[in-house]
Image (tube, rainbow, N blue to C red):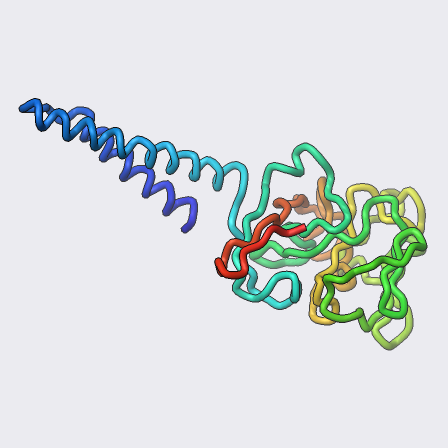
Length: 245
């Protein structure tokens, strides 16, 4: 149910509540029936309003259209995304995040935060290293078949033709003035990867996601960047419902 559908349902309930409130009571028995109806209807009104406020301002639903996050998220899963959390804290490594990518697309992307601002990241031999420390990633479908390294103010990727920098005209790679070091992730930038590493269009293709400001380069340079929120619950299908960590 979309927020608009939910709002319509709430409107119907409220209208019914108003009708019951203003309807003249012709007899004591009728008055008692109306009172009972209102007593039973009130909880539904409050619950409907609370649900609408929750979906509109705190959380949203997100449908998984692709296999880029398999096995953590399957195609057709429906998630709840917390839109409020990142108003109080920055994204953390391992968060599963919905965000607008720095490439033209009508839909938000969902990926896992791998590298944070100020961190050194490289991928070699199918293993992710953060600040030189190998990461344990039990959630991935298989080890990546590419190498990656942040160096010389860019993201260098090797998919079989040697290490090549991502093109700033095609990927979000901030100018040198935005970097604090040539081999660490720039401020407000995040390296995002899908759990299905070899079937995911992510930071090894389109550069950094940005938590704030505007995209620095690439096809959407100058457009507003940001994170929509953190995915925290799979609620459909019900038999696979689980909290995401």
